[in-house]
Image (cartoon, rainbow, N blue to C red; front, side):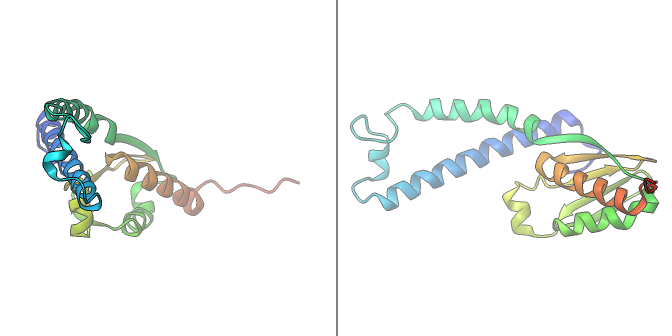
Length: 174
């Protein structure tokens, strides 16, 4: 997603994508239930007698998905500061390697930011094409923005490796 896009528009797009994704997963689960249960048909799933969902429950399910979709982007997309030992250029290789090890490739770089995306189209699809991670360069702190799970993993890796490579040298205790 373009970094210059209005944050409210980004949030709304993520909300709509989440709502659609939840519906697809829900319908897939219902379909699997129908396939593995020979006595059920799709009509019977919404029956008042012996159905998985009662008649008229579909609007309630959609309302639930709507509420969850409204909050989902706030819970899953974060902005996090990450400490690095040394400046960005001293840690450039570590940062690029950390992203490459997670399946990301550099797609854009300017004097202030780097943007990464997953290299696998399948993985991007599974994340609803909301896989971009942006790093804002800093002296000893990087600001990472993107999916929470990936940010936490990469942040820890970068901090650990930069400390190992460029961190303060500990003097032996005598």
